[in-house]
Image (cartoon, rainbow, N blue to C red; front, side, top):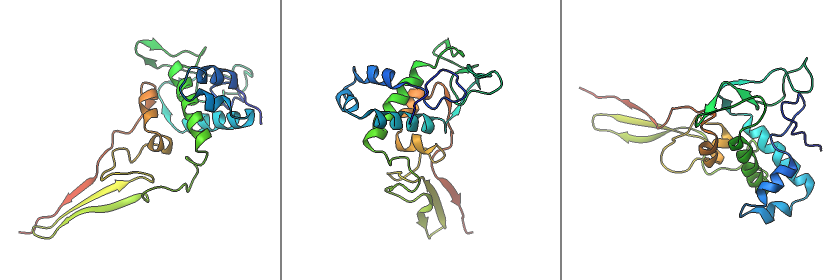
Length: 194
C-alpha cells in the first residue's frame, strides 16, 4: 500500500506523509507507540484518518485543478480556498496545521483501535429515537435521539459524522474549517387533555 500525500494531487490518499507523522509523533506523549508501528500500519492509519476526515463538510472550496494533472480535480478536500481561521486565510499552497495535526492524532487513535469507525462497530447504545419521558396526568411525552456509541441521557451531536461522534475532541481541532450541525437535544411533544 502506497501513501500519496502530494499536495493537491489527483491521486492523493492522505493529508500527511509518514515522515511528517513521525516528526509530529516524536514530540508527542504517545510518540514511542506510534514510532514502534510498522510502516504499513502507519500508512493504513494515515489513509484511514484522512478518509474519515473526508466525511466532514468543509468551509470554502476545493482547489481545482489538481497540482499534477490539469485535466483532473484534486482527490481530497484539502487544500482549499475561501476560508480563514483566526485571521489566516487557507490557500491552495498548503494544508492548515490544524488539519494535518487532526489527521495525525486521529491516525494514532485508529492505529490503537482499528475498528473504531468500521460500520457495525460495537457501541454502547443502538442508534435511534427513544421515548425518554412519559407522564400520564396531562399526558406528556418526550423523545430523544441517540447516535450509535452515544452515552448519557441526551444526544448533543446526533447529526455529526461518526468520526466526530466517536472522537469528539476532533471537533475542537477542526471547527474553524468545518461545518457542523447546530441540532442538539431531544424533541419534545406536549399533549394536554382538557
